[in-house]
Image (cartoon, rainbow, N blue to C red; front, side, top):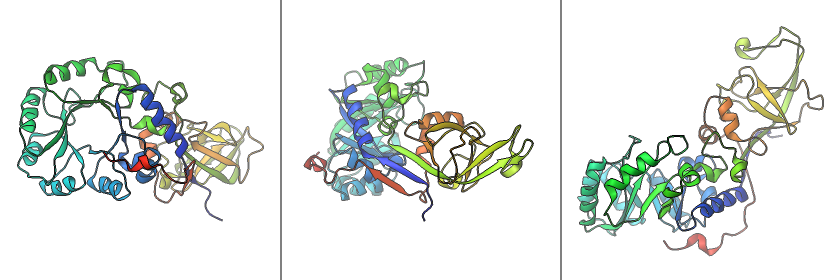
Length: 369
C-alpha cells in the first residue's frame, strides 16, 4: 500500500482564482505568474488551468521553452530577462518577452540583431531596490530601446515592495510616474497585493502570482474574504498512535514534554516532504476535519499531532496539513514563514493527485499571441 501523503491540485480552484483576478481588473491583460514550478503546483499543470490568461511570466528560459513545446502561444515573459547574450537567439526564435532591469543587460540587447523583434518590459527600480534601472536613467533607456531596430513592443514595468503593508504603493507610484511620464508605452505594475488593494496599479497588464494559488497576498486577510480557493491540499493519515504519560517527552531532542496524559498521532509527513522543520508545537492541523495542533520536533518522514481530545482518531484517520479548511498562510504564520515557502517547498517524493481537470482544453489555449 502506498504511503498516504499526497498533494491534491485542484484545477477548478486555479481556474476560479484566475477569473477572480481578472474581475478585479477587467480592462487589463492578465499575466499569470507561474515561476518556481507554478509555486509548487506544476508548471504545465498550472498553465493548462490558466490557459485563458493573456500571458505567462516565468523565471527561466527552460520553463518558457517548455511552455512553447506544450503548445502555449500566449506572450511569455522572462522575469529576470536573460543572463548572457547567447540566450537571445533562442529567445527570439520562441517569441519570448524579456525584462530589462540593468544597464549591462540593456547594452547586450542593443548590440544584438535578433531574427525577429523582441518585446521588452523595461523595469524601473522605484524603491524596492532589488532589480530595475534607476528612475534618473529610465527615460534614456526607453529612448535607446525605441531607437533600436530589434524592438517589438515596449512595456514600462516596476515592482512594489509594500503593496500588502500600511505603507502602500503611493510613494513608489510617484517615483514611477515622474520618471515614466511622456513615454508612450503600456504599463505593467500590479502584483497580487497591488491588484487586490490598489486600483491605481491596475494598468495595461497585471501580474497576479500567489493569489492564483488561493493564498491571500496579505497575512492579515483570509483567503475566503477574497473568495480565493486553495489550489493545493497537502494531506496524509495517521500511521501510529502513542500514549504519553505526564512527564514523558516526544521525538528528537525531547522538544515536547507532556504535562498530562497525551494521546499522539504519528502522521506520514516530514521535512523530507517539504513540511517546515522549524514548525514547533502548536502549528495548526486538521485531524478528521477537526482542528488540533502539532507536537514537538518533526522528523524527516513524520510529524506528531495531538489527538487527546479526538478519541475517534486512530491509525488511518485523515489529516490535512494545509489546504481545504486550513489556509496555507495560517500554517506558515504559525511556523514563522510564509505560504510561498510552503507551496514551493513540496518535494518530488510527494505524489500529486489532480482533480477538476477538463478532458480537453479549448482552442483558446493555443491562441496566437
